[in-house]
Image (cartoon, rainbow, N blue to C red):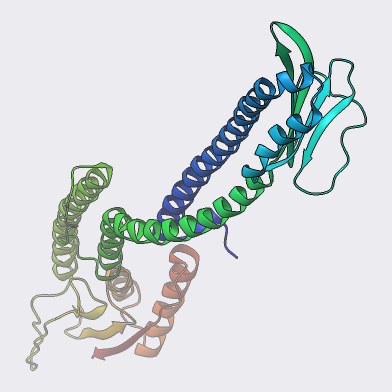
Length: 359
């Protein structure tokens, strides 16, 4: 699996959008869940304390006048509260005076102290019972908090549905938004590949916005313009240099062929600006002439350079070995050419040549 940084921009953008949305959503839902849980527990504690106060006020007379029957009737009112598990009344000595239980359960081993204790599953509230300003006992309310777990379960189910729905919406929005960023980059990449493949520097990328991508496209187009201008300048310079090289090459070829009894004419038309075609005519002092015709392998500057080298050696051999046989003449020319090509130019090119001598 490729690393994240090697993924396409489209995949990175969509992944970034999705992760950002989901993380923000999960943090929000987690915060709401914690807030709901704490709020519900506080409400349950407040309700239990209020309920304990009401029971204490109604049962104060029963405790003061030692009327357990009436006290039990007062506690029986807790039956209307389904989340109340039990309620207890203690006298001022801490003895159990009356009780109510929604299901069979044991009362606390000893009377709880004033205050409240809370856990994940239940809540216990103990409050004083007063009569005419004198404490006559204690009321204890035991409440069930299983609704917290039920609310949490429902919240998780709702949260799962919300996450799935939000993920689909975030995916659609990410797919739409990423095109705004990735499409200009993909088009720029396509133009770059065309320029690289076709060497057409007149192409331009289309700018659609003035953001950083738009600035990148401006820079790319400006670079293409500079390359096109530089390329045209280099081409023109090369053209001038090639024209000069062709002029130099053709200038060393013979223009007149004066040999009694013969009509001689020649012209060189290279395949490129500079070629390796060769011909030479050198009259001798005894009324004869040396004639050479040859061709260097390949085209271009290297072939033209080898041709000029052959022309120079041909001229020198005509002057120094004008009475040699054509075979000897070609052998000497070949030896000199081979040495120069291998030791000086490091070339493996060869040249065909026909040498004739008019005696």
